[in-house]
Amino acid sequence: MECPSRALATAEHSRPLVPPLSKASKKAPLVLVAVLPPDLELVEPDLAPFWLDRFTSSEIRLSALAAVTSSFTLKFVVRAFDTALRVSGHPTRVATFDTPRLAIAWAHLLMMEPAR
Image (cartoon, rainbow, N blue to C red; front, side, top):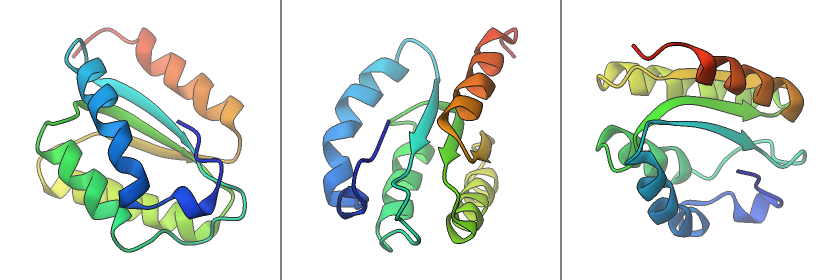
């Protein structure tokens, strides 16, 4: 998933992504690579709870999430999101990367691992 503009990094603009992600995750848990806009320094307050609700309710089955950002603040937010997933009983591999290439390589490695 690539978010081309920071104006689109909101729960409202994320809603159309839910049905196709939910449908795809019915076959197998997803490994998502989220490429965040380079100028995004902070997410809207409703964005993390929106996705947390989708992932913890099993509406979207998530195996791993890679976030591509160079922002220290967003890396911190992603770590907090990782903690929230774990506390809610949905341990998911979560990592941040500086480039899409590294995130995609990590995702490929995870997809090659035997199922747990």
